[in-house]
Length: 150
Image (cartoon, rainbow, N blue to C red; front, side):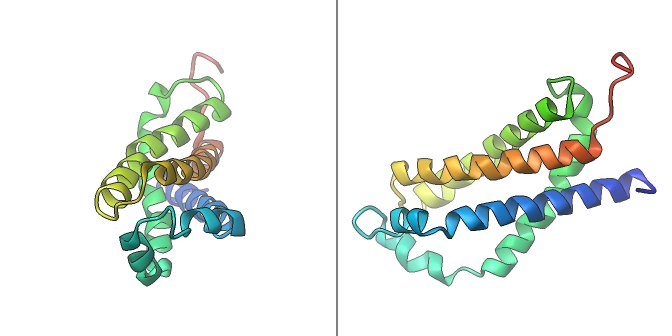
């Protein structure tokens, strides 16, 4: 990459695209669909509302949001625990999950859509996989060894 800004945008878009692909494959799998859309377990509001969402704009928005995650990684990289890109990436993915997905699951899916907490936990487990993948990809592309370890 020619410059840092291009590299940040590139890493964010690639990480967002791949992590959303992973999440899409997991969330659309028949076993997960049978759990999350079981009318005996899921709230009526969730079942009525979620099929109406615009998936294309939702996915595109999250991919673009990954550019912000990439930019923040570039700012905080030196203070992120770990000496390798893998350790930094795993920590960063966990941070994305903790600061974005946990908040969203609680305030949107649990409190607004009345999704039961056990189903929130199923979703959060899947979202952790996607977040760690995102963090690892961002870190792999942007990782720079500190001067002390060179």
